[in-house]
Length: 65
Image (tube, helix red, strand yellow):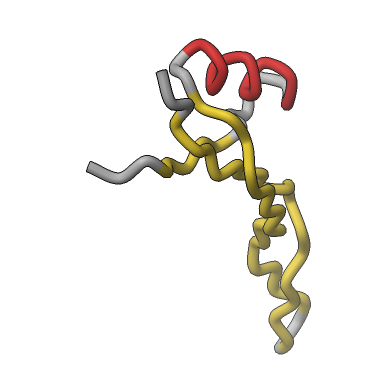
């Protein structure tokens, strides 16, 4: 079993809520990744990518007990 796990900040929760959820499960954040989420928008004959939100994920390391 891996001692690392990824946690994603859900759309209806804050970063603090995600970090608290990690701590409640016994994990400490060791890495943060932010990725933009895009949607394609057609304007005439061209297609443009527009950012719609930011995806935030934390990698957590299991606390030793």
